[in-house]
Length: 148
Image 1 (cartoon, helix red, strand yellow):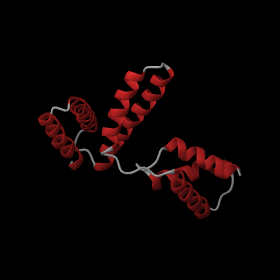
Image 2 (cartoon, one colour):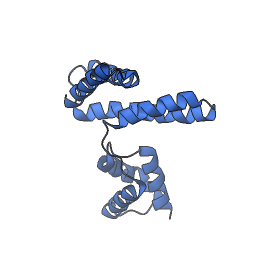
Image 3 (cartoon, one colour):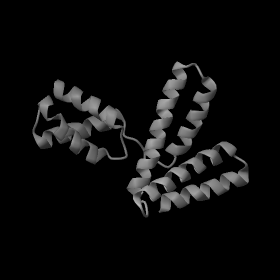
Image 4 (cartoon, helix red, strand yellow):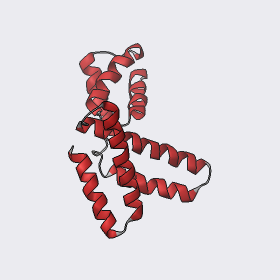
């Protein structure tokens, strides 16, 4: 489980440097990874580990939105700091243009132009962008592409 060991090494380094925010976030990630490992009853695959980190990142993004609505700048800054740390361990995310190219290729490959077959298109798109793109954005772009 290289991701887990990378996070542990980074946490020890942050402890030595006295970076309490980083230590707190990395401990949280290690805890989530350990819980997932227990839940699955064994070793986590790299894919499982990435899903845990993606979930943590998504939770931070949602919390940031809520805190912005509640005018809680202190908590927004804390969540943003945690999100930056989590994103260090995630693969680089696809931008909308890259996602549009993948979506267009999948639609061409499947040979559909109907919104009724959106599920089929989304299944293929999600396989190709797994871990590198947001499903909500992909769904929006697929719907946009099939509607036009």
